[in-house]
Length: 279
Image (cartoon, rainbow, N blue to C red; front, side):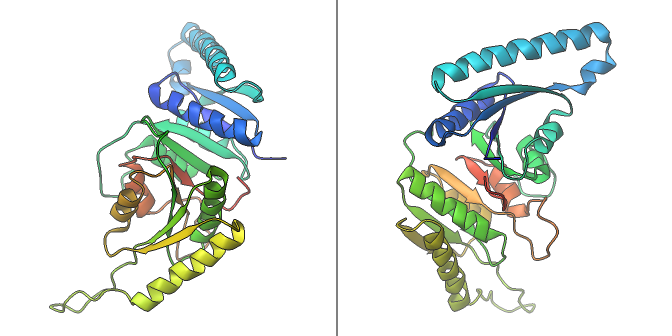
């Protein structure tokens, strides 16, 4: 089975932005699209009539969005699904590993911390597929693909995916690495991570990018600042920011780290969370 694009729709501005973004890609590569609307299961707690009304509204919404999609991307194969339950967890659980889940998001203020305060963070954490989070913003004039690199294996699928995205768009690829600052003895000056070791991380990532997409132009950037801030700054005018799911321990690929969390809480560019499926 090839890659399918699952797009969450609810009639809002962000979901329309996600719909436009996903349809544009589908028209380019011929992938089928599934428009998904989730009826919140709280409707079922307030009576049969309300539940039936919610179902009718879901059908009407999907009919309207299907018509919109057909006008935007004639020729794209479009199907619809209505799910019941908690919207964000139902969306996260629907696509297979090789699919791509696309959701919209309102831009939020920068927030540090571990609390999953954004629904896009919840979906990105729970999904087994790659996830694209699209802000409700003007992005058509932006150029370039940025990939966040780290020293763990989880960033390699992101590098390869980012290279293929850059080649598909006919744009350049920028690899950004903001290495962690090592612990320092009390009273000692800050000691930056070895520049040579950090540069080697970027050299290895650049080789992976070239192998995945021969001919793509690759740039490397080593940044001495907080990783989320470095990525947001580097991708300010970019068409796409690609992040991996990297952890020092294996078996945790279903979760995202604090860097991805902070990026999503101040999203200013479409962000693709690349897992190791084919999507």
